[in-house]
Length: 599
Image (cartoon, rainbow, N blue to C red; front, side, top):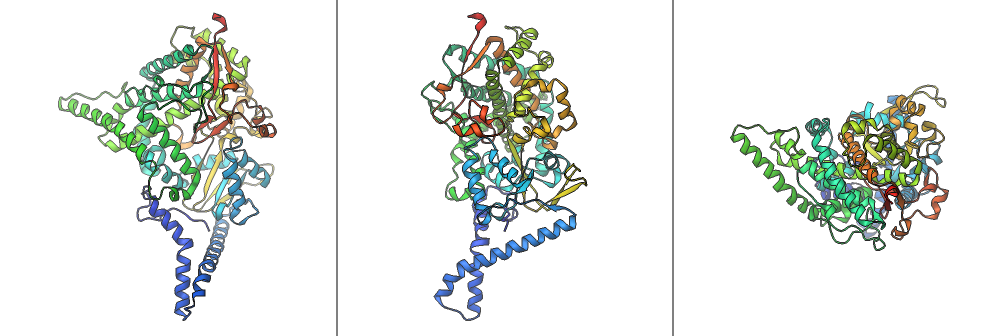
């Protein structure tokens, strides 16, 4: 009884019409059957009131059972026709696997990232299984071959799930991260040239905002700071300069107060706001994340009011004058016969030079800011966290940095390229703490995923994927599989990127996908790596000791006792890694910084 959200409207790409789509989604299984059943009874002359009472539950049961059986028959027939094997199903105790739905809903955010999915798959004895949640096809996988097909070799057979597009539509609109097909290709072709160049102006932006952030750390003295919150603002301010050519100045607003902060949606709470645009940007992102987790039922909670409307209006009021001003500059230069420079300006100036489409420009800016801010912030947060846990890694990295770029000198592209251990540290962080812990793609039509032969299956096989199924892969756990990475897969060891173990990735690159893979691989990955590298170099030029401050973590933000029995490194964690759209530390990452050499 898979209820597809596709084609429920005359214009199936109109994801803003979520109320109409939700009503139709509810009407088909719960309203249409009783109406038809009562009409049928009346045609045979039955007019008893009892008939109406019986008609509702009986008709729903008969209709949906018949629909389920028919769907299963069609899927079985298609699988045979394709010569593919049905994906093994998870079998719960309750109808519609409601117990599995409940387990995922209640434990996904309360335990180590995706460990619930890992346990479900391990209990099935398969790396890929169909959870059949509420009779819909929800496929979970830890198989890098399935992931490879979905993201790369079978890319054209999958697209973003409608429920995800709908949840983010009011915020991201038809931006690059919320569309497929020709529109996505247009977005990518437009943005790609800007991100493949090495731009001196990027490093000037990094330097300006990094020094502001480091100044706040120095001003704190020995008092701990929430470095996650500081990094989030650093990347947001740098993103504002890089994309808009304007200053957001979120680092100028008060940071969380040590010992007086409580749990926030993605970290610790700060006193007051930090600018209307930045506050609304954060709020809209959090709301859309909650929507996507609720799945198809979220419109029920916003049926009479779009909760994102206020924040979206603030965001639009911020972007409109910036874009209009840039377009006005362009028109003025064109009237004078002067070309518009696209090489070293902001992304806004680059976009304006290529198009007059105001809506397209705004959507590109907003979508790329989302990626530029959170992924880099997560990478830096978990890198600094692990440097504090492993002093020998910190010492080795700092020695490399100071030998190539001594304190007082700004790092350059050449400096970063020479720092092999720095890149190994970043790669190891991306392996164990990928900013995006997993992702899913939907199959609009039935397809099959070819799998290579293995010791357990000597002959190549293929897995049948029903139409409308969503395939979700967990890069978090693929990155930790011991059969792929070795028995030390749970251990943070940057040297694996410098010795013979690197061959594991060279031979099978899809076991490491922190920036996605295939045609939709992250455009800004080099920008993110450069920004993270620049900040770490600047940080370790000035500080030699990084110390966790667990006493300052807000109540409820430290790993629970139950994690001591968890797999995959959970028992060793000193903070609580969590995941929304991107990874973050629950309650923030409270740390103190010092320089023993200057003491």
